[in-house]
Length: 249
Image (cartoon, rainbow, N blue to C red; front, side, top):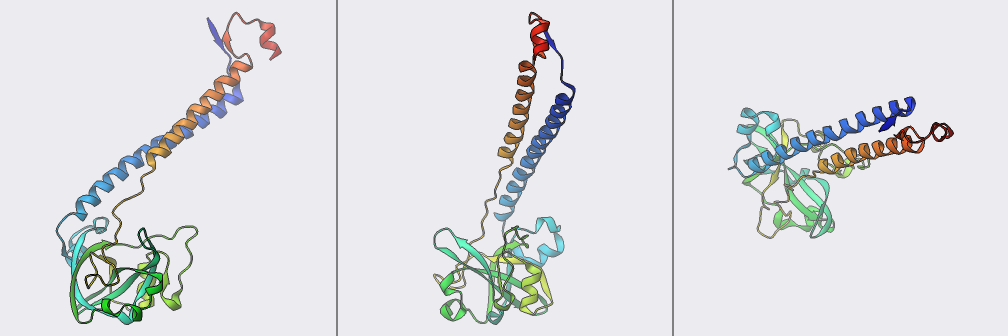
């Protein structure tokens, strides 16, 4: 036969900790389910046939805009290029080239035409990719991205950003009637020329299961510490342990 005399303060501390850690674990499991649904929806959306951008903006809810394949047509204003810092896994450090696409009678669209290496950022170093005249292109709708804690501020004078900031980039371009999203071009304007299109990542970080395991693991560790404390202090064990042994703890 066993006995158990819980330590009041230790019990309150452990109970509060177990509730908090378990709640965090369950929250991460809920986030995991949400992320898996989001990934499935985005992958299905990205594989659909492209439709005119204005149709998407007018007929679909805003939370269904991102990663929708679209078609846009107009003329690039290369004099207003802006740049967003980015890494290419194959080629290293460089910039994504964002260029306004002027559309007669419609809002201007900022197009991410693709990636260029750092030493070819200047338009004069890649003239073959600076297509003039009317163009039609397909791509994926993208929205702004929030800067991280350590994201550097933009260099407005050079029109350089370190995260996708639609409002900031549009203001630096000096244009007012702008579509509220970016379009990532599916390919470059000229085969083999820069910028290199089709660089949109379609994979998403999903660490929620690992976080859930961590929180539940901490809860189990706390429970183990609680049991060990009571065992070592004689508050849990067999009745055969003498009162003298218990009191000496």
